[in-house]
Length: 332
Image (cartoon, rainbow, N blue to C red):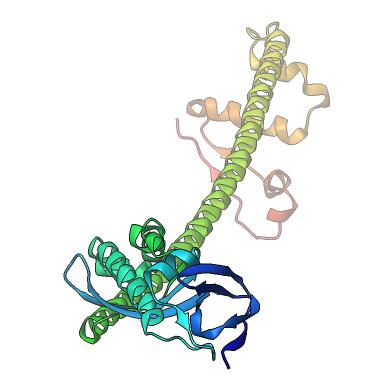
């Protein structure tokens, strides 16, 4: 039938050309048209994701594979329709392969921008800072004149994986593994050092405690010695005072005795004995008589003493032992 009906989705921008002129255009249109003289163009407005895989070389000449997806949408459908053939059949299928070329062009532009970013970074930086690569590539695509001329807006550039070559991956894994092992060993050594340091602090604290205890004991001993010294000093002062007192008492007694003996100092002892004879002991008188005889022994020819006299002089303990009466003869 020459008259046909089309109903487009809201995310499809439809342009109706009739006799080489635009008769109507807009998203989600539905209308009847005369098929022999009408050309329909349908440009999708919905966002689309384009996967990609880029093989690039980093600044340090290491191969790296970037895998991700590019998100875009058509911002100016009329401009895009003027550059690529988006004409559709009455069944809604594209009549050419130009819609597929759009994704190819976008991927090519993204690859060029990604190559520029990756070549300015080292392998480690690319592997460890993929968000930096994403941000720089997305900014470059937003400022790309080629994408702007297509009427397309790039909404996102995401890296799903960044992989080096298998040999380099194994080398990096080995290096990272050695680094982790080294850090683990350092952690073990640090823990041991911390334990040793803690034990040293404990020992030092114990020694400081012992030193403090010994210092207190020394202070106690010094205090005791000071107390003993004070007691001894007081005792020495007491002895010195007692000695002085005794000396003064002896001097007083000597002075008193001297004063008592002063009147009789020049008197003969015999006179003194005679003066005291009235109440004296008979034995003492007999002893004095013997002394007189001893002093005048050269005048005595012969002296006879009776046993009774000797027994009375010797006392009761000497009477039991029999003894011959001595005889003393003084020869003139």
